[in-house]
Amino acid sequence: MIAVDTSTLSALLGGDSGKDVDLLATNLASGDVRLPPVVLTEILSDPVAGDLIAAKLADLEILEVSEGYWQRAGETRAKVRARGLKAKVADALIAQSCIDHDIALVTRDQDFRHFAKHCGLKLA
Image (cartoon, rainbow, N blue to C red; front, side):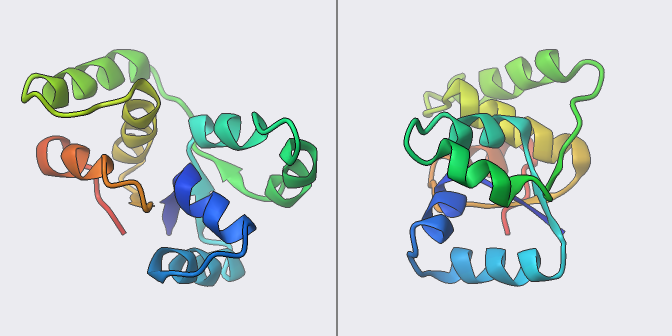
């Protein structure tokens, strides 16, 4: 089972190729893909493609936000920023969703490597 980031999901929907897209496609076929809530928000924020994409994502399970999530996400982001590294709020929220559910993230966004190195995020 994997979670998917917006970068890889957008790549798949846009017809791009790559190892991340192949991994996502394989896991979609077996029903083993989960969406962090922020990824759903980012994808549906596209004013042109949002409605078209919504139907394709309807079958994907959303990772639930558990008690203390917002605090943990803030602490996770702070760990990365304390090292002088880039840590966007949305990335910290996605990383924390994956950490909380002990699920690997498939992404092509290199910023997540900081969350992997310093916070325990698993990358697929």
